[in-house]
Image (tube, rainbow, N blue to C red; front, side, top):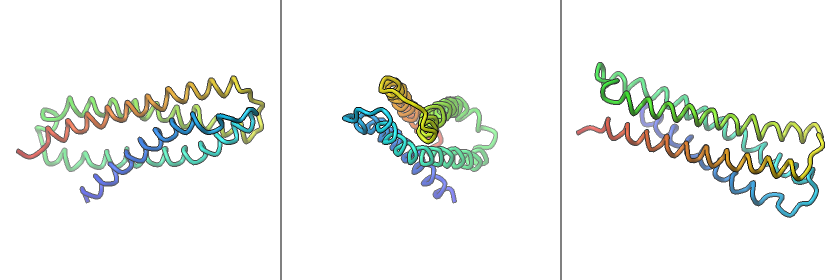
Length: 164
């Protein structure tokens, strides 16, 4: 069971990180030559319609499998749990929390709002889309960097917990 949790956890993180990096690259290419802002937004809305459920599901699986993985670790370490890995775990969970907040901002604060505006046929300009692309670019690369930092902390925990 622990092995399945680890595989699911690592797989979900890989899918989440990969989808964020892929979207960061695609947002620069898709719609680049399109002059009409509504047509450009329509192309982005299609991408975001795929990204949002994928990213949210992968992040949810990563959170749940990570939480479930802590229970056996806590049981195996017993009273030395906090002494052995407390600081490293606090750093990792703090970073993970920031990843969740930033990822939620990307999915719901940026991507979902654009999709809803597209569905509601809200007027849009190229200047508005350029501003959105800049915010999304920063947010996605920030999520990627924070996710990598969280992975780095997790590897530190793994090294602390490795059998001698």
